Image (cartoon, rainbow, N blue to C red):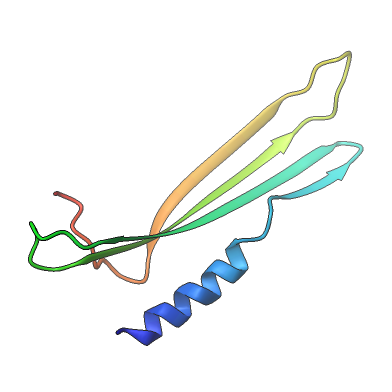
Length: 90
């Protein structure tokens, strides 16, 4: 068993498992949301097992309510972590 990636994954999960963060003031609200995912594929059709660690980070801004309306703008990025030990073409 590969213990080093497991420990790193556990630490990453602990940091990223927190609920979404929202910092609010009279000018609006800053939004931050993160999600970590670990996927393991053990399929007899492939010679090697595959592991994929990904993190999704979403950053946004919500305007304050004015005349019953508000707006939200968000940007999202997804990235793999800890090397490429997966087959993305299967």
